[in-house]
Image (cartoon, rainbow, N blue to C red; front, top):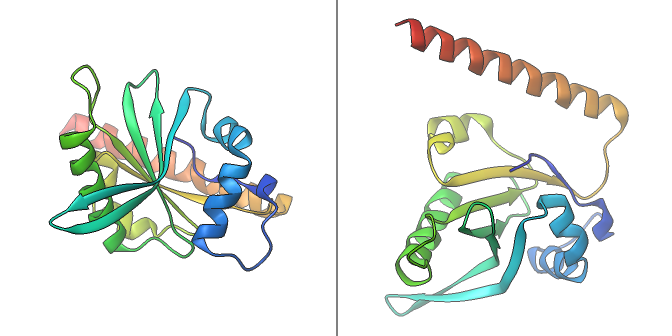
Length: 170
């Protein structure tokens, strides 16, 4: 899973709704699949699930051939919030119970947000779960911002490696 996803090909203006984002993704489904990865197969849009007489809708449902997993994608216009994790956990549990085939692995959830909250993600220990959070960009940022993000990603990777080495020596 990548982070961020560059969705400038959707041609969205400055103001759009989650439904607009979803519709634009489906209109440009081939480009979207190229951006998220070639082994994804599209299964459903607004997949309706019923739990205790309440209806919920998974924005986009894919299947990943090599991972042999269902992939639920939830689109969020704003920043990542703690409640998004609970919502995705519910979706994944339902998919595991009612949709997962015997030879498949547990489903994965991808929450695509306009912005991530790194500390929320860390404290909720999402890196240890089947829930991934990634940002999306509907317009390519300028080169300086891309360089800053690259340097930040490198620093995070170095810190994770250093922490793993400390844990291995303990």
